[in-house]
Image 1 (spheres, one colour):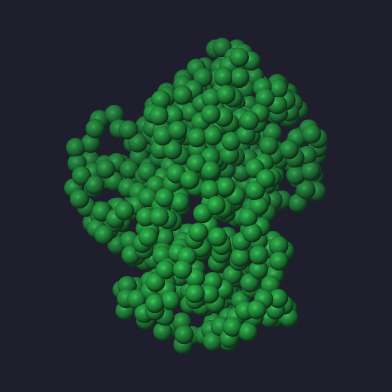
Image 2 (tube, rainbow, N blue to C red; image 1 turned 60 degrees about the vertical axis):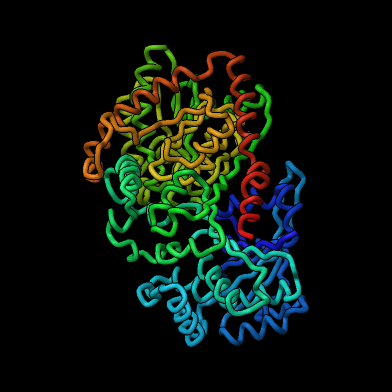
Length: 582
């Protein structure tokens, strides 16, 4: 059995995709049969809620020293001028009756020893050519560089020097790279570290995201550029500006020095190979994300759908035949405007078929949610969430632009209306008295006829396919990493449950890099308008019309989701990837 160290910013609570990955992997039977001990290492953020831990075994400032390693941990704190918290955190999957107890190491580096930090930065330059002086104004860079040495020393103490089990240090994204590089340095210098292996876990390619999001050509431009550059054998610095301005790139550029690399999607593999020559032949392992697979009855689905229809009737004065959903973070990469483009074409099609629909967009810039009493007041005062006002406590930031698009669509649509719920949560308490009292979050998953997720940059996209086993049609763009897993799970068959929107296919195949490097807003608008028409037609043809259709969608959706489960990921992708690191 092995020991696995996960280095991440989500050490004590799930905040995003990496947290979801940890929850999924660590509660599989395969992982627990193969891994003897699991450590999660990360920063101790100011004001962090340690109540998320199931036990705190060491925190000197609180007088907690319930571990035989207290004295040595204290010495590490004094050497590096840091604060260490050592505790335990449980991961529980009630459906599978699996509980995993992990060990957590948190390090507060806000007052760390500058001399020690400078020496480590010199080692990073000496061994790997990383110029830390370029990034010292970036606290995220500083934080994880300062964390590396005290975290490594604490791990060596807690793991013990006598174990023969392989120890895998997994850098989830750029955050764990300084710790991985520290491990590589120690492996050169000490026999005690001979059993340690390093893994870079690419949940995205941080260098690529701003290139895709920051140019109006978005995915249409970038992935066509990538194809042409690959054919010419060119790397990113030969096509775009020097990427070393970005501190995240400086760290992930060294990922090929790790013993192996995990990538959550097929395009992530291509993007990594685009970074630099050493990645071109590096053994990169596909380790897809898993998705939940729930088996529900037709009646359960229809009950949840009825609650959503009831809510729509209360808000909009009609009971829609179809309920569409998009549950997502409110960021540019999610391509929310593409939903409205597809609906514009679908609206005409549904109207001509005497059918109606609603799209619930559940997304907000305020991740913690608005106070419930404030939501109820907005609902009573001016009819939130059908109507909105600019400014907190209502629309802020990107919510304003999205709502402008929603309002413009609703003004001209006949058969479909969009309700933008800019709130965290899906219940009467969180979303107002007009929502049915029985409503809970799972209803927006179970009751959906179609879930949208046409992202411009999406390394995997768990949320897009979460409703798959509930019989929803998942409308995803071809740049989503989940598409590769879907193709494997379906053996490349086209299935009614999945609609893949290909916005990167050009009507005239490009002949050179020069043909695609200048793709901009006008070209993207034309391609999106044309392709969204095809997506609308496909979606209409697959929407269920009778209970038998719902039954078929549930059966096939559950079958596909089962082939994409976390158990499959752990057994067929993650654990074999660790073996390759040896």
